[in-house]
Image (cartoon, rainbow, N blue to C red; front, side, top):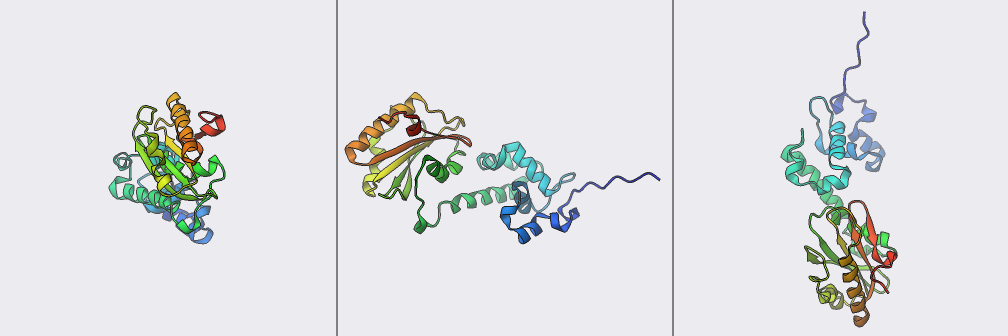
Length: 235
């Protein structure tokens, strides 16, 4: 008699209890699960030939990880096999909740001690934007974040950026310092000549207004560049 091959595992229910994402989350905590397993909990069921964990991994591979899922248009996500509108909405909602969590707890305002701290505050969201956005992080005397304000949406270049707009909220909120951040939708955070020119104008204006310009940063896909660290536009 020939030995039977193991039956393929298509359903979460077919997995051993200790391997099921929901049970693992309950016993070990959400941090112990892979991204594919967390997505599987949202999806609940898979499709023929793939359990929910496999579908979750397929989505991560297709879009390039969680940041790619965050950037993916809703219409594109719901076209994926086994997803459709309801599951696409669940995934997008979960990712948005994660983003909003980073913005809560104003009584525990984050302190910016390095470019990495500033990037951590905004890179998750800004790396997913399809247009250029320029934002300003307002800081108090202890470099604690007062607020992050959006100043421009669209092309960030020296001919269009009005330096006065950069400092408008900083002056209004009596901020001691600012960090300017914008994204490159191409994913490449390499500063352009316009980025350097804008930085130079902002730094000079900050000196006149007695507002320290601590940095100008460019956000790409999973990467960022500090113009201050590179000595671009800062004298």
